[in-house]
Image 1: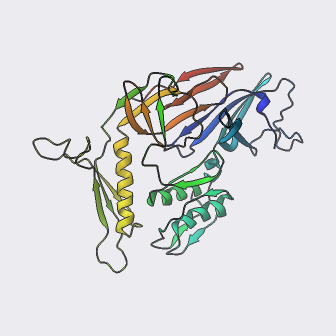
Image 2: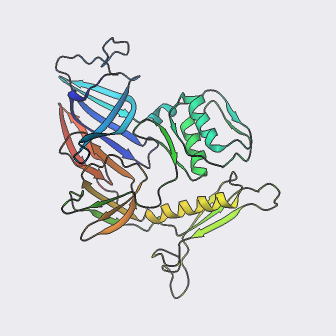
Length: 353
């Protein structure tokens, strides 16, 4: 393992909750003597090629501790590189990329196998993964499960995780992590003295895709003759509830239907409906701003922004972590870092209308 910290000119880690590959990074490395090799079989310990991993650790000096705190923010394979005179430009993606190829062999698990174990087995047996951070789950397969040669392991694993209302992604350590999405804010961005917000927040609302009632249709439980059917609606006091949006006493139901035969219990259906409803209600708020880097945040975290003019809670969908001192963290969008003749050009992406 080689330390390339002293060669770093510019770089950032991009995080996107909605993407199949949640983390990517771009780096600009100084190499005036051309000692960084492109060859995979190079004897140079700092050689960069497609079979090499990039690991990035964000270190913060904490005066109260009189010590440094290290936060891993990226681990994944190099996917592209080019040399521009004395500068090497590198792009890497999270380890989800390594699980996006074809399984190319069959994979089967019997009915009643724990679904958490099935997900882990898919990644371990079909992609060689051995680093996991999984909670205990009680959900089991309702029928025998199999994958064919053309199946994509990561897609299959994410589908099972989504079915049991869990988020599956690779974190900054390079661990395959599964969790329930946070339902309360894990961090609050504030402006003013001692705050972290460095730009005026842009907050918009779009209710066109909003849902305030979720109906989950599952399979037929053992010993029953009827299929599972559960709905969850926004509480009457919620500003987006059917009653608050209704007219002349008639509620306005904005329905989403989820059909999943693998759901065989009322509890599992209620959990799926409740988690989906929470996300649909949050999707009406779009927030973007610059802030001091907060490297420990994860894609999908619930966060809050509080300023003199605004106060709202939202799901953290996209953000970028700068790797050079003095640059701000972007929340709600990614800064483009395109290389032209050895120079970085920064420009925020246009917000979707």
